[in-house]
Image (cartoon, rainbow, N blue to C red; front, side):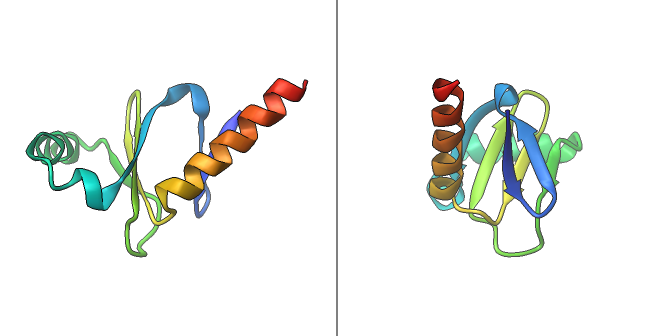
Length: 86
């Protein structure tokens, strides 16, 4: 199953490590260090040029999305319901 992150970007849900609210986690120094490391190593992908709202950490890349983390979590929950129904 794939989760739509916005624009034309979808990721396999098995690759997602976490979905975070950008305003809440960027105040933490360890997250800023991690994002800086990812940026230097070309592992950050901006889903949209709009105001970023969420950070999606995957096994090999970090996505910055304009879709809120709550919306992404709801989409993920809907995918889980579909999988359980099968």
